Image 1 (spheres, rainbow, N blue to C red):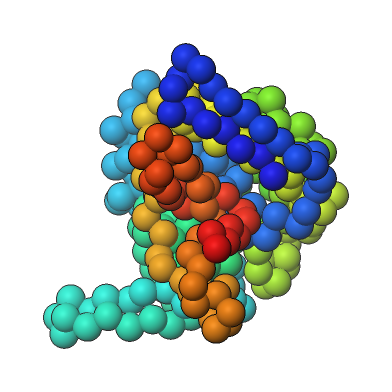
Image 2: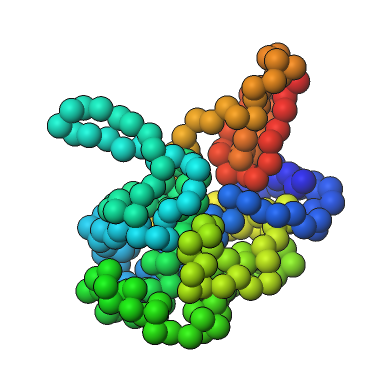
Length: 272
């Protein structure tokens, strides 16, 4: 674990315990995909965050096979019937890039993560032409490009932005897609690993506005904070008298005896 008290920026307090031990990062690896998307958009629109946000809002892509095979559900809202349902992603689903990012982060949907991983790769491969890309041309790119080239591009797109933040390969790396069908053309490389030290480096620089740039850092924080409520780790009656926070940083204000929650960390805390 790592802990940072930054309630007084002029007097930071930091503690760590087995901070370099590596774990399978699981869904926390989706933060690397989130970073990859914002990193690629900054390269395409270096002078305007508003342009990047508009593309996120207005570009719509379909799941196709990339988004299928995940048991996590996504919220589907029927405007005409004013009805909300939750179901798995299907190949014909079409959402804006912003909506796919929200599905990836808020409800931890693996299919959405593979879709946005795919889009980050396409941004890197096509550059400005990405904004005029259709599904057919995108799929032809994956069919016609050698598998090892696609695998190397996938590895670079999600991992290089972490290296630029000073996070080493031993501290945090993502090895591949989140759904099995997505491995049709893109292989895995080197496996995935996460450490408390690596994630703390990311979170600190996110707070400082250094992840891509200040506007991107703020938008990534907004997406990370708006997570859907899940209680799958709190079903045991033994925890009835405990407070359980999943994917959370627990920030304790010792003076006022308050506990503040930021929904980011890849661990579960029990406050007994």
